[in-house]
Amino acid sequence: MENYKLVMPEHLNHYGYLFGGKLLEWVDEYAWIAASIDFPDCQFVTIGMDHVEFKKTVSNGSILKFAIKIIKEGNTSVHYKVIVLNKKGVTGKVEEIFSTTVTMVNIDKDRKKAPLRKKTTS
Image (spheres, rainbow, N blue to C red):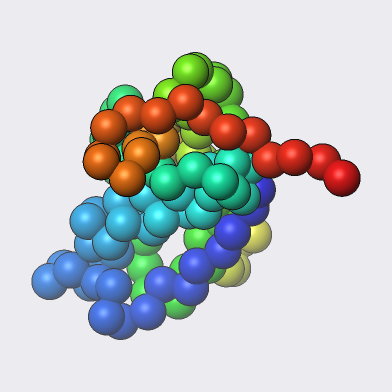
């Protein structure tokens, strides 16, 4: 799955660059969307990100590309690799600014881990 986000002034920190917490919010949200599309009968919560390192600063007006891919499926959890890319306006150079693996777990109505239920093909 791919998604895009436009960086706006309200997403910036006091130095004028993208606030790291905002990027983490988008990564979490897009991983949850991917899991919910892949497993529509599941209720997912995020239980972790394997690594958090911001590799480049991001300026106002940047368009970020989020590439989300399933990399591992367990009994109750699923892992997604999320890579965030920024295409520089003037040069057109694409830079990876962030990547992590997000782990989502399926929960039941009592908030206990529950087996994954794959989407059915009809």
